[in-house]
Image 1 (cartoon, rainbow, N blue to C red):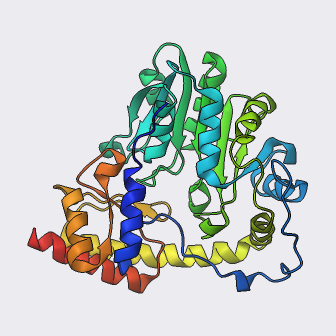
Image 2 (tube, rainbow, N blue to C red):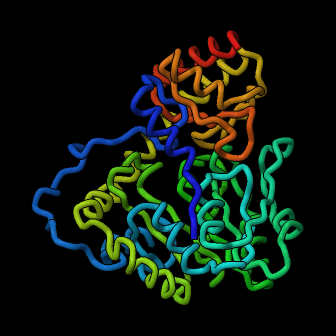
Length: 354
């Protein structure tokens, strides 16, 4: 078992330490603990294994299913790792989207899985269909791993493809794991969850992106009982249970979700306008994102562009090469408009000088 270096995370760490303008981290702006009162008397003891009934009931209220369908984890990273570790053994065949958030591909490969890519084509707006998955699926497929919205392109799975993937999984006896950490940010696009469609569908998410609360390290898995049982066995060797104080804060945030919705809608609407005008000004193709992530094509070596921006312009971008498709970079339009405007101006200067 061997796991490759998580290249994007190394770049993010460097970018956070050196950049004044961060255009590519994927979470919405952080919220403040002071916005959520009544937490001072919460216990600092261990939380419930798998998450409290209260927290899981709130997840079920927001996302469907029953409280017992959910396991609370130490973030979506742990959730994704635990699911893959529970389901993938050496030699198992795994189909993974491309472009891809690196861990979704690296984890099953590190566990010994034989990974095959299924490509989201730029000419199709990076859409991935159930028919594409069916055509790419190798014989004896064990697991399909996707993100919805796709990381890094922001492309959604359409409702008919969500249903089609679930049907294929049931018919052909493979599992589908979908990281849905960005799904809630597609406010005006019908982007249904794959969770609960049948015993072969598994979804993960967390507090990190929509809520801007990555520091809590609270995520979750929604899966059928047979899957939860084997996943629970993996988690017993990882975090065992989520952090109790973090879960209490997360519960308060879930119960005040509409405040976060209003904030995120405003930031994304402002960001769309800024990014659209920037793309028109520099003359690059622009596809309006359904949420906060875009993947503009600027051509050339975007690793070198990222290095230049960090070194000379105090600006961080995540190059497309870290997602398996060069010539692009991941752009978060959900950051404050003044930061986005100045950061993109610096990208323009770097593009002109290369």
